[in-house]
Image (cartoon, rainbow, N blue to C red; front, side):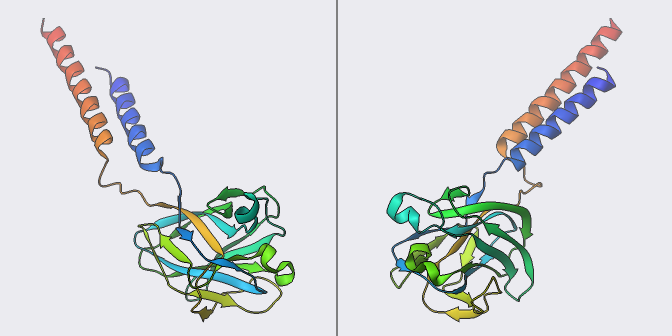
Length: 223
């Protein structure tokens, strides 16, 4: 068996491993039920802690029109940011008005990064809401609102606010009234040291092919 053929087999197997490990769909940070629509003139956000290393792929803002009209779009654009809970801003972007941003479970998302976050570290996401639109451009809130985080995420049972009435700021103040103003899409970091069963099968098959070709080659030369 030629060295080129062996090398090609190894490369193919490596690609197969990479595909299985990286082809992971983004997951929404949390789902929600209940609540009523609230509005405010401030930055409103949530805090969460990853249970495993993750990458944030997109940030999203609640689309109130989704409840009444199936997602007619945002009335205004919203600045949105991701911070460490201790204050440093990691990334910020803008969710545009209208229906251009991706709609998932009542939130309009725009892609970022991806931004790597570490297990056990707390982070906050907040978006600026302009009260001039009142509840027509608000977010789910109230005591009967329930949030369920993805298994990889632990949510803090509080809302975090930033006051200046002008633009996006770090949401440093805590409110006991739960809200769902923002959300995020993420992927969990792959574990390279533990290939999934299909990958193990591919590796075994590939090694068997290489061994068989070498055995045949030796038999042919001895004849």
